[in-house]
Image 1 (cartoon, rainbow, N blue to C red):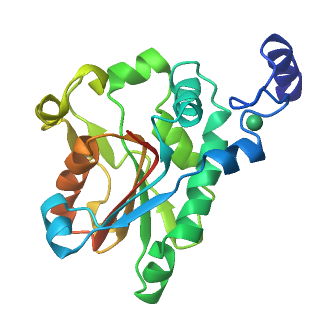
Image 2 (cartoon, rainbow, N blue to C red; image 1 turned 30 degrees about the horizontal axis):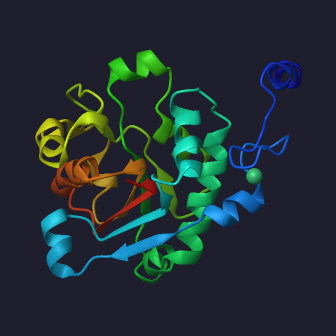
Length: 228
Ligand SMILES: [Zn+2]
């Protein structure tokens, strides 16, 4: 059934690389290699304390049409097959360009993977939360646990795209909370990895980290596809 369905979908909208148009893939390996611009920024003590975030890792620039297309294809064209591809890139980046996993193993810390939440209204419109799809496709090492609903969007916000830097911070304030139904104890002293699609001003990530500071994780890292 699934195979038949996929065949029909391929017939209606055949897969083509969003970079070069090569058939049968959404992102060919040569376009991925060409467009990768991994940035891993570990913050010093002062910045970490102010932002509640220990590092920020992205795989490309949102200004690069390749990554912009990859995200809009998933988010607005509902091509859910993009999620496992993007997830794989994030996982490889985490393994090869950061020491977060080794650090967690050395200090016997559990890693908790938390996607940035979508408001229920947005979920109804789109049918899925793209960051949750990406996080769910993450093939996690044994000491990593996915908490897809640990964070909740508690207030609806309009798309951030048209706001300037200051307005984005005001627009987002008080919008993310912790799901009180889950066992908060499970996040305590863990290393949290927040998953997002695009980080522009960092306002959303900061808001999530602020909400999480109450459960006292040992570290919070942000991992996203693109930086705006
Ligand atoms: Zn290509």
